[in-house]
Image (tube, rainbow, N blue to C red; front, side, top):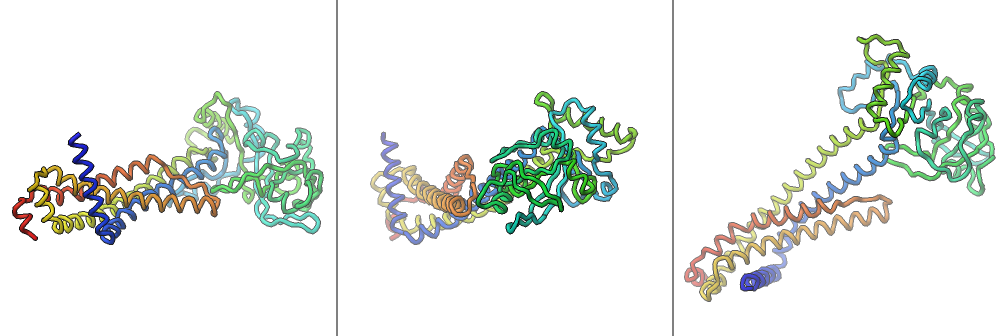
Length: 415
């Protein structure tokens, strides 16, 4: 009980000293506030970006492989000259894979034609993304319909002039009515709208169906060369639930090498891309950003800690006479030590609270007015307060120790 009573008195002395020197307290808080705000702000920004990118990557499918000409990679040492002469995935490749691959739940041949102007009577939409895919496209990617339906098997095989459109296309072309059954002009041909994709929203990788028009592949191949490099042809393969991504990749590599008649010594002339490639690259990038943000924040807190240590030395000098009186009345050394340590720690924690409050305020404003889902990790908040407490202890330990070792007679006479 005596210990808690002394601890409470130490808190009272510390807060009284902080209230008496408001300007000095405010200036001491700035360094810690900026440091905490930097650390939490950087971590929150990185976590928010990571979550948004991760949700975008998940749309690509964790058990989906994309057979393409160009491999996914980052960095300045990308050997593009090795891949330039590679053939694009062909419809022949697709047909043979569909016959021979056993681990696939669904497989689709896809192309994309970007930035087209779409019109319906007097209404128009710019920047529409045209896509064409074989029938099993719906098995390789999950999407919902706001209204209408997907292509039937007979429509896909016959290359019927039908289309699925995104919500942005539907809102732009048909602002006051349903688009189902309406005829629009696409690639110089008239096509009938049979379905509208549900609203998805734009993500950081641009994976969204909101501004997309999807056509049957057999309809599109009668108009353009669907194997042309300009349209980025690819074969998308989604594996069965009981097949691992590595097993699917191994099977696809073997079948593709057989189709292309590659000898054992020849390199692959195709790329098998998967979402884990992007995930690994993102983890590496975010690790660097986290380290840089943490270093800047810790440096700011240390600078603030030196400022607090300096303030504590001044505080000890100003209160030397009071310390002498306290010790002459029987105050123990640890009581004096606690006063200054608590004052130093409280300063750091107050700075941390102010910094965290600013971060939460900015996150609230961004969420309310910027339509952003800001992530503030509670675990990192606790970590920064632990760091603040440690910095407070380190900043105040020397001044507090000096104060506790003062001779009471000399301390009283110092005034």
